[in-house]
Amino acid sequence: MKEIEVKNNPLGIRVYTVGEPDIDRMPEEEYNLFASSLAMRISDHIKKQKEGNDAV
Image 1 (spheres, one colour):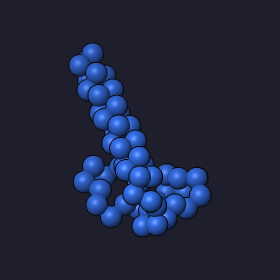
Image 2 (cartoon, rainbow, N blue to C red):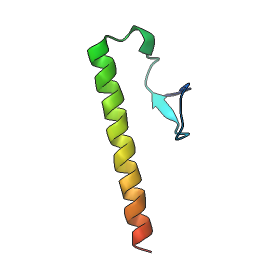
Image 3 (cartoon, rainbow, N blue to C red):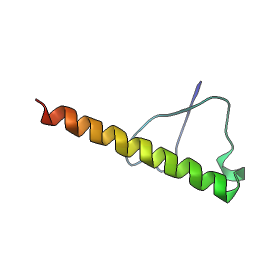
Image 4 (cartoon, rainbow, N blue to C red):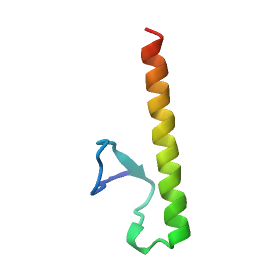
């Protein structure tokens, strides 16, 4: 697994991959799927953090 550096990363999250993706050469459909999957995981993570803080 390798950490990749994301240029525009306002959340400051770390991104790890198996292998080394070339995002600049991804077809648009694959890039959109990649981006939406990442956004969904980030949203789920934030919801879980909020739920955990509400329980305290």
